[in-house]
Length: 490
Image (cartoon, rainbow, N blue to C red; front, side, top):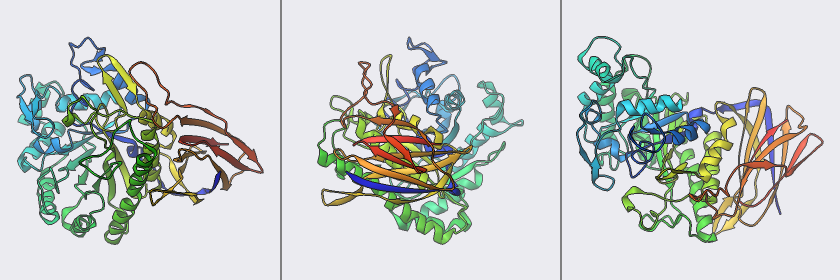
């Protein structure tokens, strides 16, 4: 059994963990919105004004802090006027399956959903096929408090008070599906759009379109132009593909050990990508005025056989729980720059936290991890020195242990995961500033292919964990293989 060592400095905080790091992403894609979150008021499925009641409750249970909408690639062909009022225009979702979009879920429905969940809204504006005037009018419609034709139209559509727009993404993947732009061109476009995207009722954090993964040239161009562009944050997208080959990504539930470790190794590439982009940002912004928003992340597998491949529906296993924990620990450790992250996607798409089939609902292994990590929300990251064992798989080195440690209201909380499929790991936890006298532990562990399914089975769930001992003010933890553990230190 390999060993690991964590030395926690409980007296010094490294950064603050924004709750928005635990954010989510909902796109008009497949069954994320329609026949997912939104079933309509006349549905026999229990709902709250058209929103699935069980989904609202499940998202509240994991404390969703922010929700991104309407895309994704869909955002850069979305025109907000199609989704307001009683008579709504039918359009074509040309990005995801060329299906009819009836626009029954629009701006008012999105903000109502955020209010039900208790989360902040994050809008993605149409830069690819939209206009500056269209965005300016959308913001006036949503946020103006006084007497104007647009504000009065909002009132006539049922919302007297202005909406709060906490975050606004100016475009989405403008290097790709958002217009295939060059960084220099997009920087100029951002300047135009942001100049007229006025929030009349409060402060909006403007998020510029950042790079695809490790495209440091895009990040450098945007950061060099920040003096003229003036953004509060910049986005980053990176998906974990098990095989690394987009044309044959791998199956969600049928995979061998080699593919599992390939998934973990590719997930760990996020660390290199974040560090590379942070270095560019630090060069241009040493005062850390610009936040990094990882507003699309997660595992992307081949669509489940028998489903519409454009809908990106995939099951979720214990492998996804491990990948979720690795990412969330990583975002915590880089919370000096990472101010938000949005898992793709909330329901029925990619690494979803919830799956639906008619009236049935599944809380996936990823949902379980988000619930386990709740104490990290709005906590302070503690400085921690670590000595971690390394796995050698497929000619790649993979840290066997993922971790992050935070402090809130005087309590110290650690999440520690073991990514090995076969080897336990002994972890010695020591501290500066406090003497450990005990702990409360929780664990998620199962065979790596285990999945929560519509038959009601839930093999991947949170249980009490007692695999530790306390001696001389230190904690000795024995992590079983393929496990995610949380510990509240006493």
